[in-house]
Amino acid sequence: MLVTPAIDRHNRRHAQTVAAAVAAAGAVLGWVFPPLFALLGLAPAAYWLLRRRVRRRLAVAARPFPPAWQAVLDRRVRYYRALDDAGKARFRGMVAVFLDEVRVTGVRAEVDDTVRVLVAAGAVIPVFGFDDWEYRRLGEVLVYPGTFDDKYQTDAAAAPNILGLTGLGHLRGVVVLSKPALLAGFADQPGPENVGVHEFAHLVEQREAEGGLPPEVPVEVARQWVGYVARELAHPANRRAGISDYAYTNEHEFFAVLSEYFFGSPARLKAKAPGLYDLLRRLFHQDPAALTSHLPRPAGRLGRADPCPCNSGKRFGDCCRNAGAA
Image 1: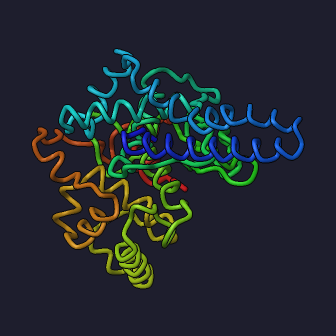
Image 2: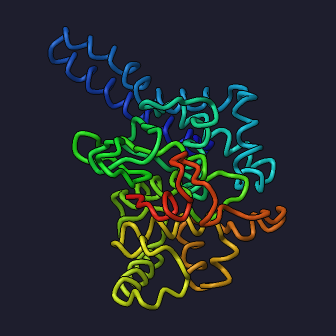
């Protein structure tokens, strides 16, 4: 997502090699049939095409970060506040590139700077430990005014109870999020539930790599994770980490829910299941418990009897707390 000097050098060498090959082919073909010397003109075009994305990302990351976006990160994103200055600069660059390339669209819901930046933060947090990451085929995030059903309907007759989905079929390349759930995930009293991290964790797992995990994850770690998930799903009564029942729906939801827990309540997860925490630490190349250890302890979080942030009029425990996030 963010162009490092190493990525820039590799891309430049690749573009130069391809451009040279195109020029050489044009020269050889032109020697046989002179009009084909015109193919030499394709060499600069090939170089430009291969360098275009990298150059655009470098330019985006170099722009001044909007003060309104900075305020959202400072106020709402605990993970960002825990980073050192270099980490914060990298996080801002990743947010800027993400929002430059992925549309955030409201569906009967207002989308402002807060929503856009929190969507981007949910996308950046799970992949912050990877040097070279792409959310391939992701083009748009749809933000709904509340929960919805599996047909993306929000009316009461549909009995909507979904907080987020990664699109399938004609909506492949789209992530759908409930606005209230997104905001609640970055509330002043954070907990293990964060629908943004949850849905983007699904995209991390869907990456075509060893064990369905990113290529930067060592093969041995991927194997250990697959084995752990298989054991947990075979014996759900154990549930030593105390995570949501929804995690035991299938291996994909297990990964997404554990990702929420790992980033939202890392100290609690580390205390309850240190072996699992260490496995996730090696998988994500991150140690959020250590990262956030110097921050003040949150005063508390939404309880079951608190009003639900989706404005349904119900208690949190009877509404969004128990809603599914596919």
